[in-house]
Image (cartoon, rainbow, N blue to C red; front, top):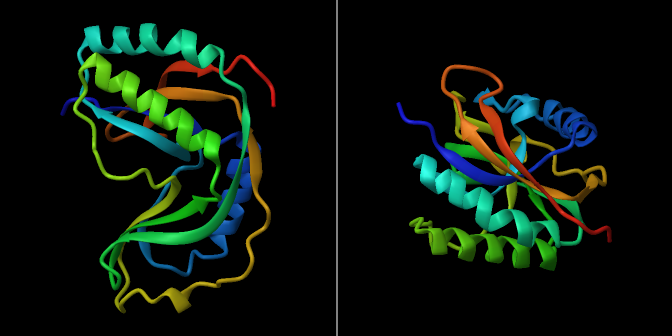
Length: 185
C-alpha cells in the first residue's frame, strides 16, 4: 500500500488533552475508532501519493511564503458528522470562521496545483476528526450526545505540517516537514 500525504494544521498537546476530554464525555457514542490524540489535526489539503520530486517541490514552493505568514487564532465550535445521517462515517469538531485560515488554505491549494497535484475541488470544510465508523446497534441521532456548550478551546496557529500516513501503526501520521510562520499576531 502506497503512503499518502496531506498538509494540515497540527493540534498542540494542551489542546489535544482538552479535545480528548470533550470527546470522552461523548464516548457513549459507539464509533468503531476514536482518533489517537497525536493524530488530531485540521486537514488543509489531501495530496494522496507523491513522488520524491513532488515532495521536494512542496518543500521548495511552500517554505518561503509560509515563513512570512502571521500566526492566527483558531477556536473550536460545534460537533458534526460526515456520511449518512443515521450511520455516519466521521464524527468531528468544527472551527469558528477564521478569514486567515481560509486565505492561507487557498494559497496553499494554489501552490499545490502549480506543482501539478490534482486536488479535491469541494469547498473547504475545516474540522478535526474525532472518531470514525458508526458501530451502534441503533441508528445515530444527534440527541444521543450532549449539545452542551463546549469549553472554549482555542490556540494560536503558527505552522503547517506535511504528514505521511503510515499503515497499521499508531499514531498513524508521521511528520515529514514543518513549515513555520514567521510572524506573530
